[in-house]
Image 1 (tube, rainbow, N blue to C red):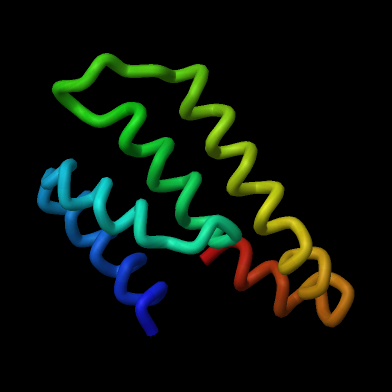
Image 2 (image 1 turned 135 degrees about the vertical axis):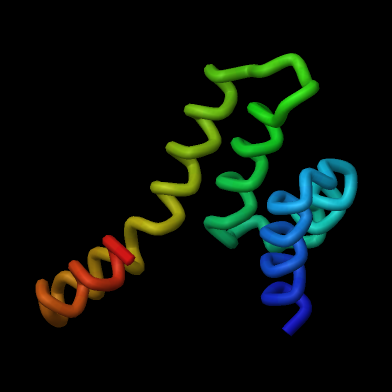
Length: 88
């Protein structure tokens, strides 16, 4: 429940442009949560900061690596079901 709250909080803070709060929520996420590196990539590119696109790309790649097993399992079950989950 705490991890879900951290994810929702990070998303809300991002929408509101509250970068310090977003960082706090992201720090509370588990290391194996694919959302953590994704939100860290957003923070690396946030307005008003020294953008670090190279770091953002690395973090997005890390999120992809964390998501890969879940998507592989979905595709193994049903391509149609996996497609909807991946695209949505």
